[in-house]
Image (cartoon, rainbow, N blue to C red; front, side, top):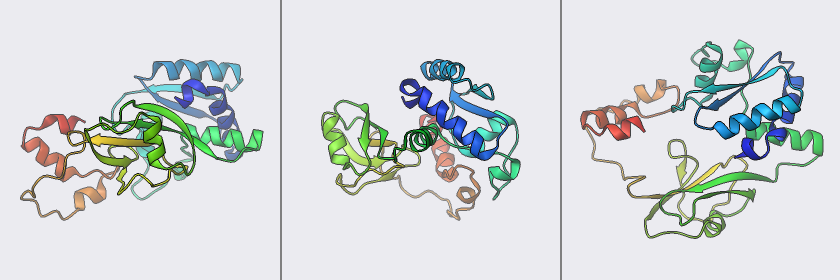
Length: 229
C-alpha cells in the first residue's frame, strides 16, 4: 500500500540512500502479484528522474522477500553463511525505511507513524491503517470493526515471523507491519510430539529461521496445504 499510495516518497528516499552509500545501482524487487505497486513505482521513478534505479518483478513465493533470498533472486549472488550483504557490496532496505529516510532528510519529520495491516478471521473489517507508533493493538482492532467470534490468537507481525501477544494493550512499534487476529484454523495449536529428536540443527541452518522438522512431518501426514503455505 505504501508503494501504491506514496511511491514518490519511496523513490525520494531511495535516492538519498543511494547518495549516502555511494551505490551505482538500485534494484527494487516487487512480487508479481502486486501489479498496481509495480506501475506506481515505475511511474514514480520516471517522474523522479532516477535512472540508476529499476523495478524488478520477482516470483510471488515465500520467502522471496527475505534479505538473502531477495539478493540471490535480483543479482544471482549468494550471501555467505554468517556473512553480510555488505561483503558483496550490497545493502538491502525495505520501502518503509526508504520513505522514512525521505521524511527525515527532506522534510525534517521524525518517524512517528507507519502503515499496519490488520487482518485475520478474528477481526470484522480487515484493512490497512496508518497509526502512530505506540498505538495499542486494541485500538487498531476497534478501528477495524472489533473482534469476531472466531478470534483465537493475536499475533504482532506476519504469520511466519510474528509473535503471539498475551493481551491487546501492547503498543505498536516502528517495526510493526501487521496485526493478525487469527482464528483457530489459521493458527492451530502445536500438534503432538513426533518421533524426532528435535536437535535443532535443521532450524539452525535454515536461512529464514523456519522449522524444517515441522514441514517434514506435515508432508508425512499428507497435510500438503500447510507445507505449501
